[in-house]
Figure 1 (cartoon, rainbow, N blue to C red):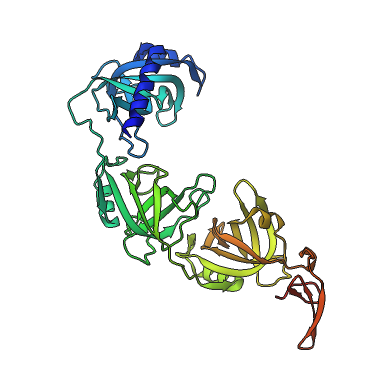
Figure 2: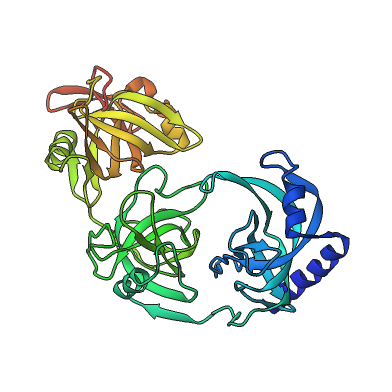
Length: 416
């Protein structure tokens, strides 16, 4: 780590030699000449005082703060965004009142919250000119806590605040978030879920005793199932959404999640009729606490396979010949080969949570987004590629066709 920051510091010195030194007011005036969201071609070294310093990120070793030409200022239209405060070979955190230099390209950014443009330098290096009184040391000690203790620490924070110290937390995955935006992402390799202290817990909120892991990065590079015992290290944050109660969660995304134990989880196996009945028994606009396994046939494809998101939406039935089904598999995850070839009558196995939603007074029963879809066999004899000899067999007085080791009736429907 020391070598890394020595390299960064050396690069910073070389960079500042070619950058034009300007005040905060000059940086704002220069940046406002840019087009919206544009970045300057030249690099600048902006000198000023730190105001409204944000929390230091232990994951990325950077920090955001606003700057002004006067230490007594309370607001500014210039921000050092996710920048690296460096002194010598060490990374320190900035405090309000510090006088610093930040070097980088200017960007004209529209701040929706403030409803105005601000000028920023993003991911630039910062050097201290003078430091205000206070502890600039980055807290590196890690404390091990239970989920209950992590929630207690988070609840004691101010709204929107996060801890400086990192905490190591172990717990059981009590609820897997399978919304399309928070399920395991093949593109980003992250996933959102809840963890609780008790094995077998189905807690899905802070009030139920679960800590929310927001877009953690599983070391297994695969979705973490319900019931897995996991470990992660993070700073704790009290996130305040626009609506609803605060959420105690990790402050940084993409924290590493280590799976300590992932026991084989046995799910209830249902046919389509049973799955619809189970979804009907759920309260309106809720999902089942645990996934189930559903065996049935594809009735019709609602939305074709999406190669970008690797999912497909279709209806299921217990009748292999049906073209309408009462259970929708919404954005089920499936391989490209199987997804592009999926057809009416195929026998499939789906693992996911049941959902009961109500819209305009009508009930809808489905398997929630993010389920895993596997094709057990193709329904029609025409869909089976011939690689072996076709045979006819007589079983219990009924004539069948054997093709590539699969058994079909005389209508061409696979029976085994």
